[in-house]
Length: 342
Image (cartoon, rainbow, N blue to C red; front, side, top):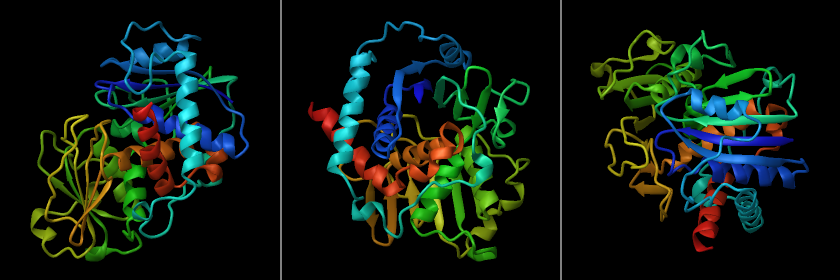
């Protein structure tokens, strides 16, 4: 399998997606798959055509960006070095930290309908971040594997040399995290999981759609952009006056947080608060406890949606070989330490 991988949006300098990509490649190599990373890049842009043009060109458009502190100059030598660090992290970490698996490990196996029919000789996979997620629509000539185009919430693209495919994995990732930390979506009514959410951008819409589809309720809190009540999540929304009487576990996330600048304050209404953003700077812990409440670093959202991307669009036929969420988080911290100490 020969892959070109990029992260596109603005800003992207803080992105840890290439590190997660390298970890997943190294994990699948250990499972017996042959994988070659042909190219890797960070594309800082506010134009969604830029990453698509990068995909169309067999060898990416030359970049004059400065050397990245984590990934070097994106040459073949730098890519090999990153994959090497990822292999070392996997050898170091065979089991997840106990704080990263509070219940059972979360795996990302998908049903048969997600299996891909065709694979290109060289494929291009692109992680899309703000402000590009809403710039593609149903008239863009892209095959959507879910409702991401209607919701303006595309965050993964795949080009197989003939066709474009898209999916929105932010929401699937958030639901995976909630389940990982004990939320039960089989409960209904006032006992169902409650998403307390600020914002109405692409990530927020993706999370609202997946949360509603899973059976949870949503309390939209006013922010810079309203979530709106006309999406697929409309029947899951509860009014302000209903929140006090809702008994289900609560997860709070503020999608108005600036990229690269994670939120630290704990919202008192929630069992779990997760930051919608993260910094690539060193963190002491990615799970913090305040009494019965838990605060999660934004790396959790990144890791969960990244694994969902491999499972749903990148390589669904090998979803059963993917690492679990808790194990991936433990390995990510180990990989960051290896890179920063080199």
